[in-house]
Length: 279
Image (cartoon, rainbow, N blue to C red; front, side):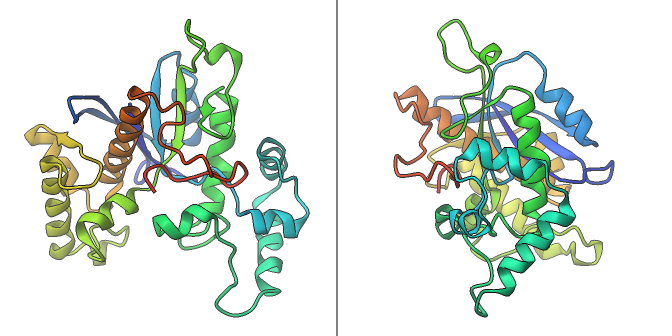
């Protein structure tokens, strides 16, 4: 299993982070962290022939209200095919025009899952630029033949002997699980001036709660001493966010192991918008 903290513009200071691990007896063991400094490195990792279930911290779909208002295709594969061929400038202009025509306080369209997860609308292009994350990340998953649960079956060469996909991606959101433990306490910042002792304490409290299984996911995180220190010392929170996504992936695997072929995704999920796992 894996959890991914994604960046639409990764570099060596802020790479894409993968948390790789395994699950059993309601315990999630963190095996290792992988740091990928470029989108090309991420694409190459996805292409490797291996089996995994992963939760990725990037949106997999756009709000239906936005897509319909723009006159874009309302079937997910066609919508993503259209979206990926646009430039960021074209996307920003289209989204800005949509917002400009709406009343104050209702500028952005939201997906159904956003209200439950407390996540930013997937059309937002600044603070955080999740629209760019969708634009950069989802095409790489598709090009690698990965199955996106509830949205896309993946390629034929991604099927195992049992006919089930070998690599399955789910949309994760670390903030959903972090807020369950910390409430509104902040635990990370990319700004060095805001990397305060209070945020360090919050990270340590969050890690302790995950190790003790004090979340509704019913899972306990198993870390080595070195791993615990590394997660606490990462003031940006990228590694910890990847681990939070790993736990969400483990929850989905637990559901699959009990016969849920949708990995815990609701039956009523909008097949255009997608869904954040565990929301």
